[in-house]
Length: 354
Image (cartoon, rainbow, N blue to C red):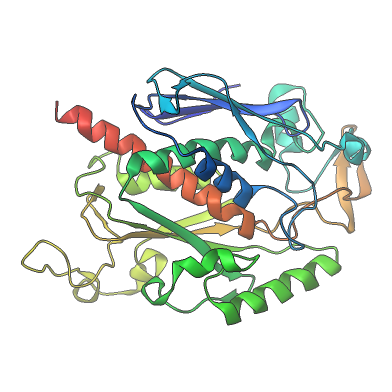
């Protein structure tokens, strides 16, 4: 199976399955001498882990990371950093009913047709549990980036939108509620909506907005390795993601050039930022902001038609512990993937100047 690594210089390779012994990863290319804050790394995992509130899956996993290499006396050594996260609360029997059944809108069918074998326990390798490994690497990348600020938050759930621009938000409020929306009133509405959907045995989607601040000028390349292209790839690699837009996004397609152009100030900054902090594929020093769309979770606690391995349409109903809305737990994943992209480009920029 290809495609288990992300990054060029700051590279993450992940391994493991949802209901295996453990998941884990290898981080290659992290510079030596970085003093690590292990509490900060674990805090990022805690933000992603299941069972943290009544609007997410109730699977109970401590998600404690154990580092195996690449660190000595709390400092990175420059060698590959191996780590594992044990799976402590597998309930594989919750998936025995789909051993020969392909669930709608899951990877079951395509995975089986491509590889001829699949781990049906929670989706195996295609499970979103793999993203915990990304959060570990992203937490280290954040520490490498130092002054760069990365803040993601829930900007919509279903048809409920946080209408305020990010400039008017207090990001410190993001972690004060279970849906991770930095507006108390809208957050309560979102939570109520997710609870109502959960009670129906259904699921709902939403969007995550992410803001990158203090990004240095010059990250990215102008042709195939545009900064926004790599951010798009990073976000679209996250489970359940269906869309990515940065800057003015699709709204920009409705505007005239005279409305959309970001005019310069004398110091090189711009009066507006519809470019989203990236021009010609290269960061320009302004805030980088983007939005990521997540589909509704495909596992429903309702009866629906499915396809079995013999080609028959059969009735099935989801069992086990699943998120009614994936968005609240996706916040640290979006931040982690953004940090991995920026860390990689920062190292590439340094290399180009040697």
